[in-house]
Length: 386
Ligand SMILES: Cc1ncc(COP(=O)(O)O)c(C=O)c1O
Image (cartoon, rainbow, N blue to C red; front, side):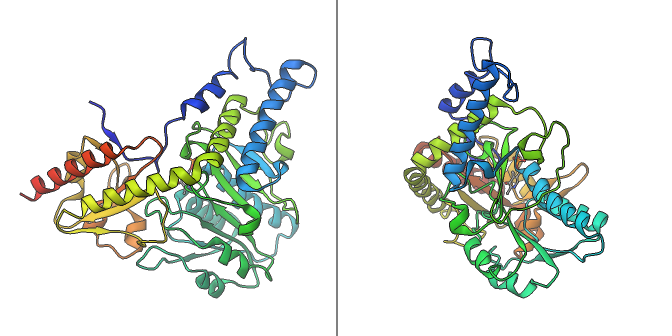
């Protein structure tokens, strides 16, 4: 029996149209060449596929294709943005005080590089705390901003709660300040309109597997005007304008590009459909006593629903929900099961955080899936309380 899939925020299946484009870039009769091979047609054709993908992603983001740097995913993009920015500044001036503003509810792919930069480059990091609604307010950035602030890094959509940060308002605050603005848009790209110029961001991280592309490929948008200097984190053949070396993965890039093309064409209708399903799910779950919504009720993405159930043990709840694939409010480390730091940061007790469930819906979710999930969660919670 296949479980109902409600974990699209963890990863999405590859769209069959994407798989088809990727397959055409693998075998001898396809476009398998090395895009860096300049001396023959195989290389030129592969390069063409890479540049098509670059343009497709740039179009989705309102960017110039020359502002797209391919990476292995949003984790690498975040590392390149944060470490690359700080290392370039350190190289230019070893004595300069450096300050970063981020938030306590960023993905680990931001929090860990920040901790690393504190330890290795004595960077001072301010972690903004969210309100109980999960939102980081632009005013908090204004209050934390200092003369030595060089980078502000905030996510567009929180991966656990789905809450949306008002990035354009944060960017407006930085108009008269030299700090760079980086956004981790892993959960937002392809799901909501994002235009790098309208938003006013300098760096933006993308992950293909969150929007029906393959795993193992992502990108960092790097503004060209004014030009940003990033220190490379992977050295080699000087690919991607020296920012990220390594043979480009044609099939992955072509797949990401096709996923971006589809998103641009279908995003509006798709997000309306998914929002309606998400609301149907929430309506159904409200039939269960002691259920609460985590995160702001309106300022959130169409595809997330994070809820907690009072008076149930979170671990047992998850173990009993075998027919519904969701994420839990617990993070399993090697030895311990810790409550989610995001749910803790918005003020939930350990019990409610453990009993948190993140449902995330997507392109292939149906009304029948939603109704079956409501019935199953209702049955399991009622039984556990029984
Ligand atoms: C907000 C956010 N940032 C970064 C990542 C990491 O992305 P990737 O899997 O492409 O490294 C994720 C994935 O869970 C995410 O949700």
